[in-house]
Length: 187
Image 1 (cartoon, rainbow, N blue to C red):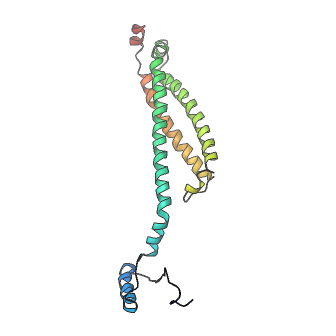
Image 2 (cartoon, one colour):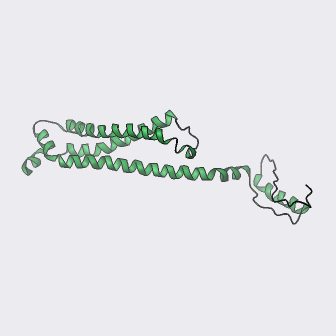
Image 3 (cartoon, helix red, strand yellow):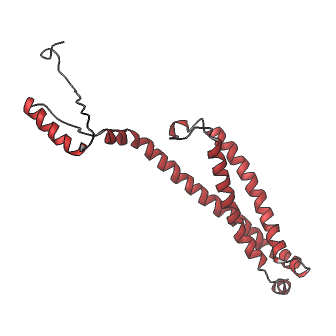
């Protein structure tokens, strides 16, 4: 179709340069203005800027999912520590009696860590199974990683196990510091 019969809505001019890309835009604009002074010139961008613009929605989604994941990890750690702290507080008398009968602080710590470890193992198994099933749903949000990447699953499980053990350790240390004499007097 001749230009006189059809209105050209858009047009694109692509320039290749080895260096000085920022200064090239102003020079190209001057050349185009010299040829067609009334031509609208909009959206002058480098390839890197176009790439950033096209990837930014996925990057925002990844950042939001990461923030929600970090929040979930914090809530999980606080939950494990809270449940074990409640358990230690409720069993203060039992722990005091155990220590007065000869249990050392190491044995008490291991007992509390074992209870937390069971909770942690169940949570990890359920979490990995849930993540495996959820990858179908969030496939469109994944950027730079395959949906069923075993290294990612193992890495996350190891990090969660370390955070869970750290959350279990605080109540275990508190339980190991229970004074049997004070516990016996409180009975």
